[in-house]
Image (cartoon, rainbow, N blue to C red; front, side, top):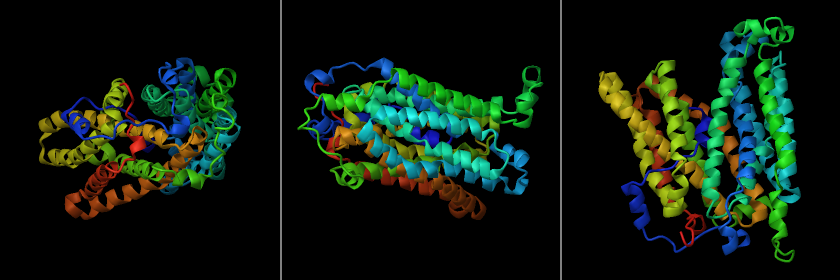
Length: 473
């Protein structure tokens, strides 16, 4: 499972005794979005504008497709096209992949600030257009510096990641945002699935599909151009659809508020200092570190064959998709805080099952392993509900509707920075633990379980505004 997948995957948790226990903890009375953008009683009953949500979900596909589509061929491209020795390929592949996230980290807040001032739609369309060009041109690279340039350029057009989150929030109400972000998360999972599929199946088309592409000199000269062109076309179609049919949400919100009641734009630091924001941002960063630590080790640490890894990844993906369906009802019944607390109880258990599975394989207890591990993957999919829950918490602590772009940009900046650094750090810890056999070779899992316990402690300090309890549920 990739890092970005783990950071963006959202699922729900079954009605368990843990959730019941969370429900019975004396909660704050009722919470929802801040007063500045809390919907009135008429607005809260509004159904989701599904046409707008589906268009935004299509735009959501672009970033994971662009990020993951090069993974199947990047090593071979660096070696064959740029002439880099095989011993150095891993370094440059890691650099190119990390620079995408690092560039995003540098531009996210700028896009969020602009989107809060001039509107979401211009930033969304501009970003998708830029992503289209940069992604398509990556396949024309013949030198490492060209690959770095186009990868950084693609990362620089990261505005769609910010604006889609803000627009989905503004198209929903306190009662419907859980359902809206279930669609958002499902679209992200589809993008994570399609990206490697496009990159792996369409690279070197003259070799893999000689009857169709064998006579095309363009694809002989640039054997990795076809998948990047397809990625560019997806982004271009998203830009066209959004330009034609997506409605501006910032203007709509402003028109529904009298000009005297509209607060002046807040600075980034003012947003961070607003009540509850720093705590939620910390919890989201902590959550991202855990997810990236897990995916840095993932099933490869069990010594699986590629076919077995594919089976477990497919099972996890299917489970995550299925958990999305009950999530809105669970969030409405137990509140965001209740669901997050249940996930925080289950997360250490799920992580601790991984070294247990490793031990089973070493002891030759294969039947016990194959009974336990699929159930553990389903449990892990349920725990991943925490990602959507934390997004709803972030929405609810936003100090005003015209800060949604900025507050999402702050989180995405934090997430991009973690995504650029954490996989390498955790992979190194895993390698050291395996080589030295510290704690029986399970050092990495001890650290990850410790991090999940830290998250459990942190959720206890979830701000009251982020509890997400809905009036008249």
